[in-house]
Amino acid sequence: MIYTVTLNPSLDYIMQVDNLKRNSVNRCTSESLIAGGKGLNVSIMLKNLGVQSTALGFVAGFTGRQIKEEVRKIGCIDEFIMLSEGNSRINVKLKGSEETEINAQGPYISEQSLKPLFEKLVVLKSGDVLVLAGNAPSSLGSNIYASIMSALSDRDILTIVDASGEQLINTLKHKPFLVKPNIYELSDIFNTTIETKDDVVFYAKKLCEMGAENVIVSMDKRGAVMVSGESEYYCKAKCIIAVNSTGAGDSMVAGFIAKYLECSDKQKAFSFAVATGTAAASCMGFPTKKDIIALCE
Image 1 (cartoon, rainbow, N blue to C red):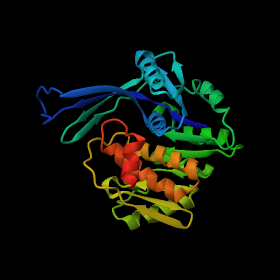
Image 2: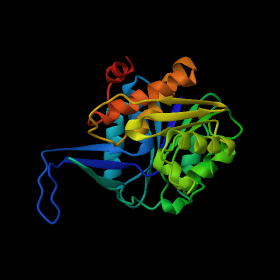
Image 3: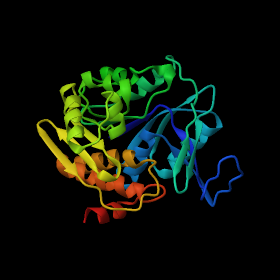
C-alpha cells in the first residue's frame, strides 16, 4: 500500500484572472475549489493513474471537513485526523499571464496531536511506500519527517521525501529511497546558485553522499535530472504550453511511484515521472493516464 502524509493540507481556491491589475477591482473568468497539499496531490495523481493510496495528515474546522469530503469523492482512502481547534487553510491561486499564489498558515498542530498520526503509521509494513511531502507547520519543527522515518526504521519501507531545507536534510541520515527537490530548493540547501545541468548533477550527488538512495531534481521546462548511485540520467521535457505549475512536482512523484511499482526499473520510472509532471503543467487540475502516455510517445 502507498501512504501519503500531508501535515497541512488546504482548499485551493483557483481563479483565472486575465490582465491582473494591482490596486484595482479584478474579476475572474473561471474559478474552482479543490483539495490540495503536496502529499494529497500525489494521492490524487496516483488515483488518476489507477493506483490506490491512503491519505494521512491533519485537518480542522469546516474547511477540514470539506477536504475530507473531496478526498472521498476522488476515491482515495481518507485517514486524515480531525483537530479539535482551528481551520484548515484556504490558499488563493491566481492564474493568468502570470501565476500568483497566497498560501495561508493553517491550524496549530501540537506535539500531542502527533500521537494518533503515529498510531496510524504503525500499520505500515515492509514493501509499503510512504510519501512525506510538503513543509511541516512551524509548530512541529524541522525534524517531524525524520522522526516518522525513525519510528518506522525497523521495516523495509520505500520512503519518498519531497520537502525543502532542513526538513529534507534531516531525513537523509535515515536513507530515504527517493528525495525530489526542485532546482531552486537544491540551490537553497547548498546556499549557492545552481543553473546548469552539470551543477544539478554535482549537488544531487552530494545528497546521495548524505544518505539519499535516489535523487530527482526537477528543472521546470528544462526537464529533470536523476542521480542513482553512480548513475545519472537526464530527461528533457516535451515542449508544451504551461498553464498551471501547481501540482506538477507532486505529479512527478506519483508518476515515478506508479511506474516503479509496475516495472522496478528506475530509469523507466524517471522518464514516466517527467512525462507526468509535464502533462500536469499543461492542464488545469491533474492529467489523465491517457494524457501522460501521449507525452511518452
